[in-house]
Amino acid sequence: MQADDAVTNATDATQGAEQLGDVLRAADHLGFDAQITIDDDAPPGTLRCGRCDQTAPVEEFERAWSRRLEGASDPDDMLHVSALRCPHCGGGGVLVCHYGPEASAAEAEVLRRLTPSERRR
Image (cartoon, rainbow, N blue to C red; front, side, top):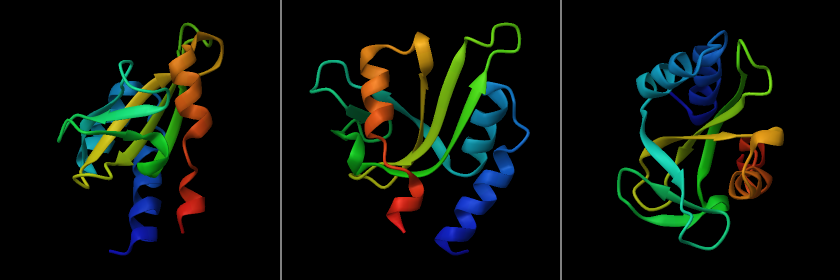
């Protein structure tokens, strides 16, 4: 399977997944089984890989795909989910954060700096 096929298959696998749990299960099935988090103790825009526990600026993580979700009962409950590859260990993980008015300053900074997967080709 080529890299472009993996992205297409990942996009197909997450289409129709309207619940966070569905998206996370699809990500896990595709090998994105670690948690990627925003490191609040590091400079803004720094992420931590849950597999190797290393940190790096968001721009160094390779994004395979992203999904945006809105809450069924509250459309203002907006979540962004990105499948990322760690620049240190190469492991796949998932970043989940708010976007829009509910986003923290740290979440907004990460999303602003997150490189679209199309630019990496």
